[in-house]
Image (cartoon, rainbow, N blue to C red):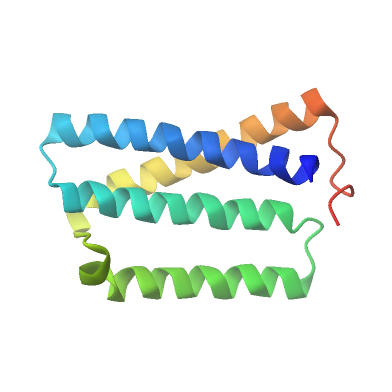
Length: 127
């Protein structure tokens, strides 16, 4: 249980930092709340899909297929449920959204590496 918590911790910390960045970016760039929420929803989804991929190590065809199917379904759901979620994703937001998602994934990877080394987590400990 502790290993699973420590594996999820980098993602949780990253999401908090993304929220803080998006709040600052929204104020600085004059984005609407719906646009800022769209960035948050998409980046949070990407970070947690990446976390799922990391937790599913070692990767098998079955596990990879699950992550890929979930990723495709996430994008489809994100696109078709914008009005339900109260978000407004426009293509002008695409560069900043991709940039924040990539930085988030890199941060999760680095933070995960340091946590694994600090707490000596073995990838085979998770069952």
